[in-house]
Length: 427
Image 1 (cartoon, rainbow, N blue to C red):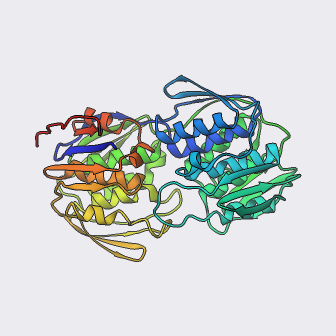
Image 2: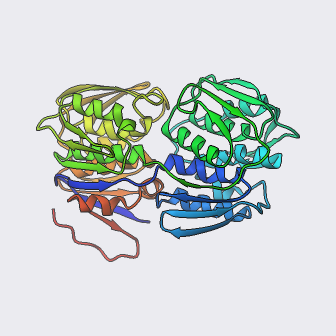
Image 3: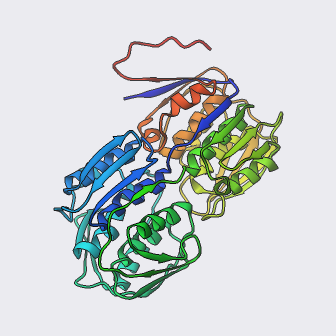
């Protein structure tokens, strides 16, 4: 199995271009199943989650063709299956979007309980609540979710929590519901807006995406369209944090700076210099970072998907920092691996207390999930000596060409496969 070997303490300098958003892509690719036509998706990230979803759609009868590495043509006019095997979906949290996408179009759908990164319980009760409010019957048998409806009818749905997945899934189903569906306490993340914009391009009528009230007027059919995926907010944030922890000067390009507001504000608070343009943000590191307090929240709050990376950065800051995880309570599972590199963190329920600055040292560590893996890469970039990171298939799920992009900024990073001969790396 592949692993990364990183020699740290090389400041990152230069420009890096951000790929399409993973979280938008894994919602919009299954959303094409709701259309009866040909969709062309541009600016897709070249990552494993996209590749896996393409395999799933092909198994269901869709014709998928890459026009180039980041442009995918999907013809969903002859979908032949409303269920799919668990083997293809077991590692993909976003597999549940197939439920909403096919419920309205086909009237029934079966999907294995979703997988994905293992950092705590992520229930789908709000998804089920939404489907049932629209008139569907939902059952879970032998690890499979079964949803069926003779007819979907618009309803007023109040989400108990502002769930991103439930917001998108209910929106997908509601485009085929008779009348008007209102989702209250909807999540506001950028990829929700992106998915709504895609569906509108296909002929849906969705208003209010990006606010806490979304209204969907049902339709009889959706057509195909050509659509460009937004840039990846989390990938951008990862490189911004990497610049800060290495004492670097990195310009992150091809982004929407507004999406980065919660992070740029926190980096500025810690002493970094921030410059913004129309589609770029430049992060110049401070000589000594200051401690800060971070609390994750739904957008526009601080993203939970940047929490592990930010916690790593705080270990290099002067003083005591407090990180509160309000989205996923068990997301501190990666702390044990960071501790092997010298990070001083104490966990108290949903809070991490980080003492800094510490001297990070290279060692062998194991990625436990996607963003935890990114935090280990960030730590390794700032550490003395050599770090070996295993289980990097998690990282490949969400970052396109990570090692190539970091190397272009001056990092000493190599990907080693089991077939490779030992690689000599100079510290």
